[in-house]
Length: 77
Length: 167
Image 1: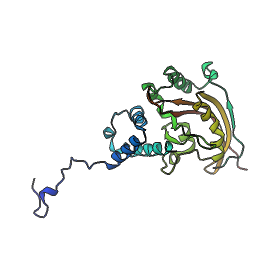
Image 2 (image 1 turned 135 degrees about the vertical axis):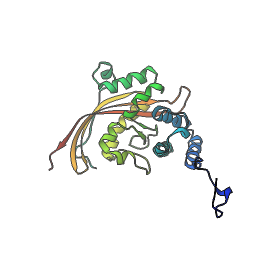
Image 3 (image 1 turned 180 degrees about the vertical axis):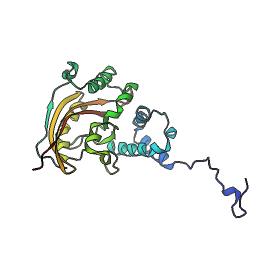
Image 4 (image 1 turned 45 degrees about the vertical axis):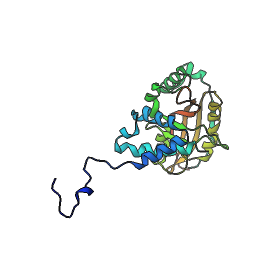
């Protein structure tokens, strides 16, 4: 790889490396803390047909996050 | 949105489903869940687009807050994408009177008695008044056999949606 002399090699992030999805980890931690993990798994399995939220396509993650946010609120009373 | 007439909710009882009087898709969901004794199984997958799911937190006079609205669920068809996709506080039916009138069905389901009934009401919606009649089934389910967690599944079928003349 050829880089500009103004661009330091150690700052380069290869294109295929995706940034960590902090929202996913924050929501999962909140769900686990409120004992809603089974509901998280249910929605993933029954609607999105995946076993792990990291397997969700990026375009459907936002929709899943919105459902999980409502889930937390709905059981928070 | 405001209701012009007081909503009418009539419980028909799940015997009506067993006698074949209910909507076929609603009946299929009922039979599928009853065969699993209220436990969620892989069978729920095919019904998810038609369901809305809410918690078991009955508080005050209204039904529990909704957290999931299926892509082809009657509530999404009636209240629209913007309502279904909103991000705010709790997700609730956008009509307080209808909301309170519907609570009894959730109360019955959470007491262990699946609720099946008929409802009819007139709604002001998006500048028009509609007369709506629908069947609704409410079940309480558990996500796994040993779970202490419960939630309600709502399956609604709009039978008639008639735009009324402007007054």
